[in-house]
Image (cartoon, rainbow, N blue to C red; front, top):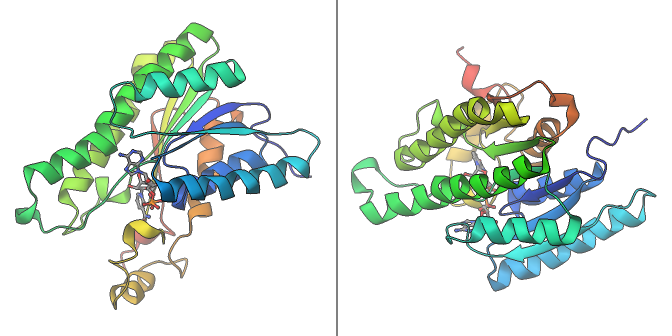
Length: 264
Ligand SMILES: NC(=O)c1ccc[n+]([C@@H]2O[C@H](COP(=O)([O-])OP(=O)(O)OC[C@H]3O[C@@H](n4cnc5c(N)ncnc54)[C@H](O)[C@@H]3O)[C@@H](O)[C@H]2O)c1
């Protein structure tokens, strides 16, 4: 029997119009969650989110326990992004139980060519924005008094090496730092912090990088025999959000088909 892991749990997902975030939204919805779907707010993400809401409404109609979703378009680096996301969750659903930090950027650049502007942009989108949003969300969770779950999408690059992603990897290492230390700081409020670190997952973020012969080379390094797809990440995210992980906090789960442990 299919067990709903997130029935009536209220979750916000950033960068959810496409790629991994979209798969997380669909998987959460299939598990009964009520969703605040965040997207960047440009015309493409607006169109994408409309089709996502249509997909979610099909899931809703197929089940008695009806999930529902609202959406908001904004840049995660805006100073009031956290407050606006919390306000929407509370005004729509009355509370917020979980947040998934998924929005992010990764430009492939040689280490010595990275400009201060490029570094600052990666830091503010991948770490500064999520940090401030986490403060807003966990303040609300503390006021609610029944705990919560913070799940961040980090990356295997935070703990392994990539020649053109040094600047990006450092932002994801910062995310892991927030995960471990946040778990300690807010454990007394029943708030859990965990991270999922994807290997190579085929999305628009790496489309250009994988366009040439690199794709076959990367596939050849994955013991499970294929590159990842967004739903491979969405399923472990649901686990961390759910009560199945009620005593799991401060952890980083690498989801890469065993690529990073492959020695020979
Ligand atoms: N695809 C991979 O191989 C891979 C590997 C490791 C980690 N990740 C991480 O997974 C997450 C999702 O990436 P993806 O692969 O689905 O790529 P993607 O480009 O499809 O999705 C990224 C999302 O972030 C949003 N975003 C970017 N900047 C934003 C901003 N300033 N404000 C609001 N939203 C913004 C984009 O609009 C998009 O929806 C990212 O954090 C990425 O670093 C991806």
